[in-house]
Amino acid sequence: MIQSAGFRKYLNNFSWLFMDRVVRMVLILGTTIVVTRYLGVERIGQLNYALAIVSIGMVLTSLGATEVVSRDLVRHPERRDELLGSTFAIKLFGGIVLNLGLLAYVLVKGVDGFTVLLIMITASGELLKWSSVIDYYFMAQVRGSVAAKVNIASTVFASAYKLLLVWYEAPLVWFAWGYFAETISYTLGFVWMYQRQGLRLRAWKPTWRMVRYIMDQSWPMLLYGFALQAQLKVDQVMIKDIMGRTLGESFANIELGQYSVAVKMFEAVAFMPVILQLAVAPAIAKARIVDISLYHERLTNQYRLMFALCLATALPMYFLSEWVIVWLYGEEFREAGVLLSLFAFRLVFSYMGVAKGSFITNEGLFKFSLITATIGAVVNISLNAWLIPWLGARGAIWSSVISFLVSIFLVDLFTARTRINFRLMMNGMMTFWRLKAVK
Figure: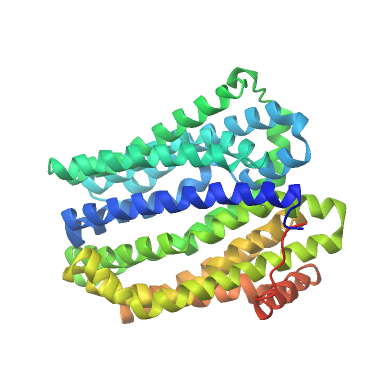
């Protein structure tokens, strides 16, 4: 089984994706430490407030099309140019709507001029996110090496840019341009790699028929994306807004600065599930067409692997976080270490939630995922409003833990179509040591 061509193909794909993520994680983490030490806890809080607001709205750059297009590129490779061209049009339109919407939002809310500048600079990078459609194509071809090379190159460029800013002691606003700089290099890299394969962007054929098909299939995922991003990012916005009103802007920025450092470290540690899901998604999608029992077996195996890796990550995180944060960032960020140790309780939901995406996509349960994400977002926002004034940033962590417990696990019990997934997840978690190679 291990010597099979299919296994070697997916192993090679995973290896490239793993190397990509590890190399980028090291580069991003190293750069983040240097930048954070330079900016200090209050200014890093200001910058991450802008990033959080943009993150909630950035789903507009895909309009929910990511999962549908990735699936159809596997199932219908002959429609490549029409799929890619139509998705390009959707993403470009979404980027324009995002920028206009954010500008209206910050003006109506009465955000101070400097924060508006930070938000709009960051949002401008989303105008180039259409290039991710090329990434979908290579992933559908199980060619993770292409994405890995482009991602690493763009991260090197962005890291060098930020380190130069620290070297020249640049003001905060120039660090907001770092995201835009990375997006430019990412776009140029994917366009070059696509054309290097003998393919041409001018061959893309956006059609109104395909745009309507994609949007009809994916509009629940658009709303789902908003709800999920709200569940993931609204805590940073609410920490700043709630604590700013009660304790002042400076204190709120400091609290958010501590929290954002913990979040960045958490995201750096929790990189594995996304790689695994991307690597095995084509195999699971093909199994769904060929054999339902094989499909269930591969889903269970994915859950096993996710839970095993979660255990291997969560325990060191809980016990070592405070020491690691102080060592890397300095005594000023000790509270971020305490917060990071609490994030260990959220890891299982991050791993299993990403894995669950394979079931949702292949079963076409986009409307269900919308409902679950909306429930999770409502629970999270409600708990944040209650716990942040009481516990500060720690309250935001416990709010997210409870909301993900509800949205990822408990809601599956309420419909017949999703109870099977609940059983597969529980089986995978309870038998995580029984890993099997992909056939």
